[in-house]
Image 1 (cartoon, helix red, strand yellow):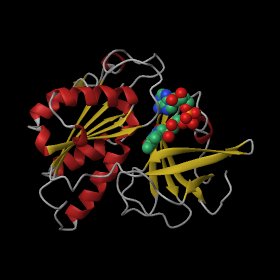
Image 2: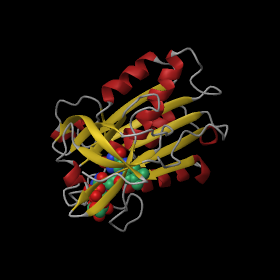
Image 3: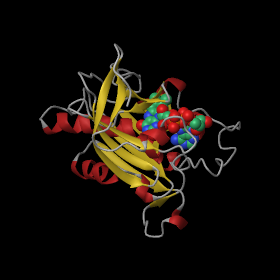
Image 4: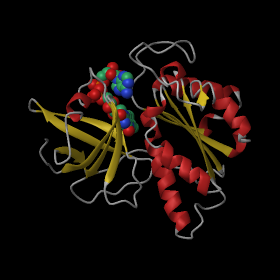
Length: 272
Ligand SMILES: Cc1cc2nc3c(=O)[nH]c(=O)nc-3n(C[C@H](O)[C@H](O)[C@H](O)COP(=O)(O)OP(=O)(O)OC[C@H]3O[C@@H](n4cnc5c(N)ncnc54)[C@H](O)[C@@H]3O)c2cc1C
C-alpha cells in the first residue's frame, strides 16, 4: 500500500496472472483519470518501511481500455519487485497520475515500416501499439496514416516467458499490417518448442532481410534488456541504419561493462 498524494493515485489490482515463478501480469485500476499514448509507461510504487519505492512499467494495455495492464519480471534482489510480487487482486499500490515516455510509434519521419524488437517484458509497449491499431482497423479506419506495417520479434529464454504470443499470433494471422516471430534462446530447457531459436539480436538481420526491411524506410524499436539494446543498435548501425531511425527503451542499467556482443550476460541475467 502507498498513500495518495497530489501526484499519486491509490491504484487497485483487479487481476493477477502468473506465467512462471518470476513473470506475471497485472490488471490495475489506476484510481483516477489516467491518459496515455501507446508505448508510454506508468510509475508504480509501494511504501516499504515508511519509504515510497517507485519504478517505471511500460503499459501493455491500449489507451482504449479502461484499466491498465502490466507485464512484470521479479528481480529477487530488487527494491520494488519482491514487494510487488506479493500483491494479489484487491491489494493497492501507488500510480503516478501522469504517464511518461517517448517510446511511441514514429508516424512523422516518413518511414512506414516499424521493426519492434524485445526481450521478454519488453514486449509490453508493442502489445499496446498493436492492440490500439487493431481496434482502429476493426472499426473500419485505416490502421495509421499512410500505409504503415509493424514487424515484431520477441526473445525469451523459454517459450513460457512470451506472455502475449497467442494474442500477437492472432493479429498476425488476421491483419495484413502485422508480422510476429518469437525466438527461444535456451531450447535445451524447452524441448517441446519447435519454433525459432537463438537470441533475438542474433536474429535481427535474418528477419530484417526476410521481411524486406530497409534502413531508409524502417524505424527500429529496441526494448528491454540493456545488452540486447546495445547489441541490436550495433548490428543495425553496421547494416546502415541511422541513429535517428533506432528508438530505444532500456529497462535497467547495464551492470557489466563490455561492448556490444562482447559477453554473455551474468548467469542471473539472461537477456533473451
Ligand atoms: C521506461 C521503463 C519501462 C519499464 N518497463 C518494465 C516492464 O514493463 N516490466 C518490467 O518488469 N520492468 C520494467 N522496467 C524495469 C523496472 O522499472 C524496474 O527496474 C524493475 O522492475 C526492477 O525493479 P526492482 O526495484 O525490483 O529492482 P532494482 O532495485 O531497480 O534493481 C536491482 C538491481 O537489479 C538490476 N535489474 C533491474 N531489473 C532487472 C531485470 N529485469 N533483470 C536483471 N536485472 C535487473 C538493476 O540494474 C539493479 O542492479 C522498466 C524500466 C523503464 C526505465
